[in-house]
Amino acid sequence: MRLADLIPDGFLNDENDAIGLLEAEHDKLLELFERFEKTREDASAAQKEVIVAEACGTLKRHMRTEEDVFYPAVRDSLRDEMIMNEALVEHDGAKSLVDELENMDGEDDMFDAKFKVLAEYTRHHIEEERKQMFPRVRASSIDLKALGEKMIAAEKAPPIRRRLPRSDRQRPFPG
Image (cartoon, rainbow, N blue to C red; front, side, top):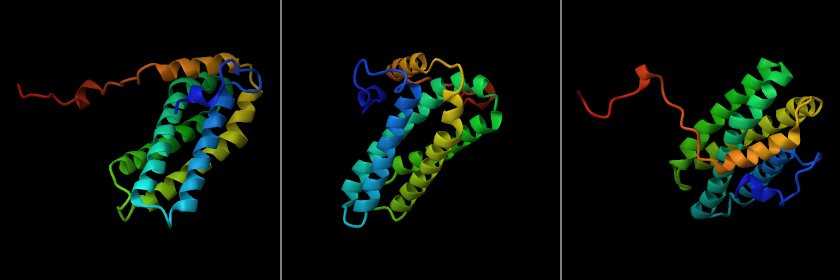
């Protein structure tokens, strides 16, 4: 599911803009976390893997949209480096857990625990955005409808490949 799939065509308006798009994904993630928690005891490993895969895919797309489009657009307006940097640190922790989960199967002893911690991190992040960041962004002069349109367009683009600094790159062949 893509970000744009959560919002009907032509539905972007002042009430459903960049923040509305992010909130739709927040709600989807919260629903997936709740579904996992309700079915965890009785679900097969394969059933848990399906829920976790959907949550991880949604979360990766969501973080990419925030980091590549939303956060850069609101950083200057908020003039609060701490809130923006904290959001990025939270993303780093979530990405680490997502990477680990994507390389595990549902029968692994740590699978449920890692997904539970990912859900807790994500819930905390969502709460901070809802209480601290989004109200300040709404009060700013940012055109949230235009920003929402940029977010949808960016999702259609291939992922940005960030190059490592030359000193960190490994040569594929000696010589």
